Length: 147
Image 1 (cartoon, one colour):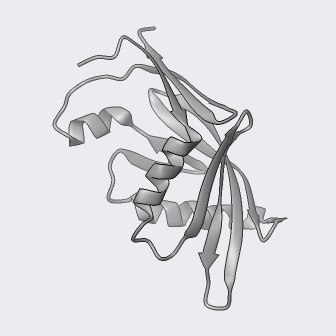
Image 2 (tube, rainbow, N blue to C red; image 1 turned 30 degrees about the vertical axis):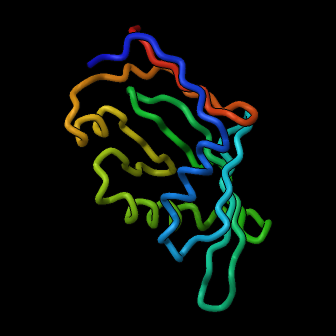
């Protein structure tokens, strides 16, 4: 299978439904909400600690790198304050969470998702030929096609 031409629109509601399903049995993170805008993908929620629940906000800039979806952690705020020093800790925690999933990897401040590996994992062979991913108000636009 090879995607030769594709334009896919994924809405904020679609993403929030998937996130809610994925985190349904995850007690560590609550009230996660994703919003989409031209600057990127905003993810906010609450993370419980031993002392109190902490509100966080992140901004992820999305792009396509070598046929993979790349999300770079552009901004991180905890309790409304920027906390640049926590970025390595957050990325290390994400690396631990996705370690079992070979379609996702962490490199520095980037999450990389390889849709072709996801195909393979599900018994399909193919190439997505991703060319563009763009965050717009309320939707992600993903395009694929032959170069």
